[in-house]
Amino acid sequence: MDLIKDSPRGDTEQPSVNAPLKRVSDFWNSGFDTKTLPDDPAMYLSSGPYIVRDIVPDASIRLVRNRDYVWGPEPYLDDITVRFTGAASTAIAALRNGQADIIAPQPSAGTESLFDGLVEQGHTVQRFSQSGYDHLDLNFSGPFANKDVREAFLKAVPRQEIVDDVVGGFVAGAKPLDSHVFLPSHPKYLDTVRNNGSAEYSDLDIQGAKSQLRDSAPTVRILYNRDNPNRVRAFSLIRDSARLAGFTVEDAGLGSSDWAKVLGGGSYDAAILGSIGPGVGVSRVPQIFKTGGGSNFNGFSDGDADKAMEQLSGTTDLAKQDELLADIDKRVWESAYGLPLYQTTGTVAFSSRVTGIKPSSGPLGVWWNVWEWRLK
Image (cartoon, rainbow, N blue to C red):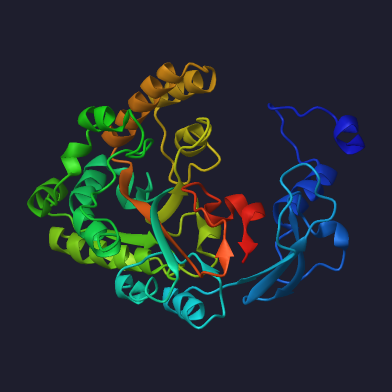
């Protein structure tokens, strides 16, 4: 605190690096990134009902009751072990054979049948729409600096096929997401979709994409997480479809577990990624879409959209917020920014040994009410 108080005020005309503050900032941003238990107990970062007691790198974390936690509901369980696996089949097998009591695997293409028989064995399976969504964003540089090329590429993306292949087995009649700012559960969603320009990309249009390319043959590098089977499948479908329009689509070669670290760099032309949808407040929208926003990774910039976002940040009128969000959504679509693909689906399954499991569509998922979990 003294460091902040005693530091000289910054000068926007002649910016300079404050070395002591930078060290604090760098540690805050990355100092808690660890796969092992820190030697210093002060780094056991938690203000909730549990703290970490043990870590097995890339395998498990053991949580124990935080004895200093007195400002919220007291949990029933003293000890929770969290095991990590990227494969839904492994998680489901662990539940079947009693090695796990609660699992929350990300549903992915071709895994529907893995859940068969769990209910008959006495387990509970619950599926729900999450507040997250996957989307394809195009960089406003390289081959996509030209709006015609962006529009052509978006016309060649088989959104309905992606939805059918990735989430169709879990959600009957699933359709592509048609808004960058609203999820289908929002009362403004349908009105916004009718007017935001998303209808231009509702159907696959290979011939329209070819015409817009005017015989050019751009090469496009797509960044995505190779460890996520849903995005692997989306990439494959986009690659094969866009090829028919004249594009050459390449894997950016950075889809490792550290793929997110290169977001905003120049090593790719488009990205398939996921975001948490709107919850309480509207601050996420300027972060993503405002010129220079902290999560504006693709260089989108629209003066009128910026003005709308300034108004958005300054009003608490919910109706006015919805009006501004709809306007921003329309401008994002008109820019050929990219495509929302689908709202993600969550699945929680748990054994008869536990009670109090109530999955939430929010970012905490099954963990939001951990203090209510009990063993029978």
